[in-house]
Image (cartoon, rainbow over all chains, first blue to last red; front, top):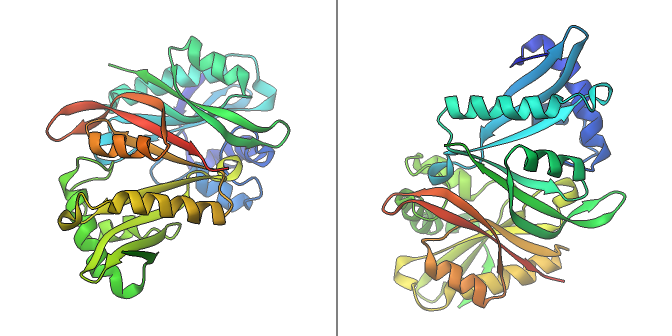
Length: 161
Length: 161
């Protein structure tokens, strides 16, 4: 598996991963009924640097990296990660998260923050914790999950330097 | 003092409050060297409902209200408040915050979240606490203050229903 910046030719494969995750509405605070084009615009925001993880079989996952805030908050990075259904359980998310921390440090970021990790997404929470992120905040009932109803979200944070 | 939706004619008076606060770079995570036009665009984002507090002497303060997230997070409101230098200490911020909670409830929001309250802004932190907001998260060294250097920021949250 290699992880590299996304190229224009990757867009269809990337959105084949991103669109179903956003349509499910279980993990990202994004309208699940956006048009495909709007979902594309969300993932490829101008401020996002987009990466892909791939092996010989194709693209396994994608992530974006951006500054979480501007001005006095511009030294904290933010990322979102998604893994193809077919590539679950192979360590793709962990590899992308490690990669993103290296890239973030190269770009001068001093920390990384996830603003809204849905507590029901227990695998993600456990993975980020294993990779050194701490739950620094709990947002009570801040996410309306399509199956579980109102659930807490976590703010997770890791110092990089 | 009354609080009402901003009208187009209020823009100059609003930006006379907003621009110096953003230029100071001490409380909002916004680039302090944005152009005046970009600062205007920041305060009047299409997603922002903008309000003003005024008395017979003119506009004393302004706030915006928006959804803090989309999708599963769209039931949590977010606001930013600013008070004119000349109107400090008169309860304008408190009045605007109370007003914003009423408006938020009218619009169906179930909670209100402030994402990035700079810990060095002790008056604001104390005021929001007095008005029922809790510090639900601490973002370590997440704000580079022009005077104090890297300081913590707080995530503050209040249930409205």
